[in-house]
Amino acid sequence: MGPILSTVVAVIIVVAIVGGALAYIIHAKKSGKKCIGCPDGNTCSGKCDKCNCGCQDKNK
Image (cartoon, rainbow, N blue to C red; front, top):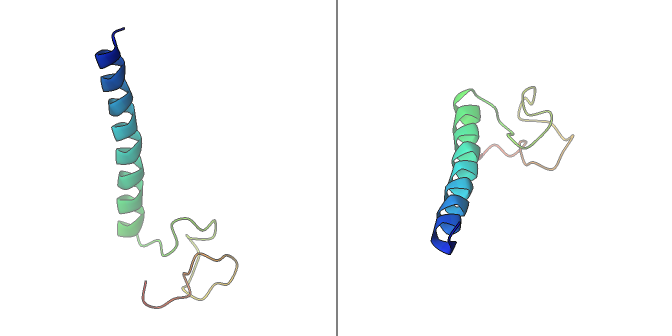
């Protein structure tokens, strides 16, 4: 593989990873999750103090 082809492949892989992460975040927010990174994000009522994700902050 030439240097240009390997650079293109690397860029495509990075774009796919970032795109997948962005799609996950958008899907999680649309489904109503308050704390995406929190392990208790699905059950968080907005007043949890199990993690430091900031889900108890009403402005988020």
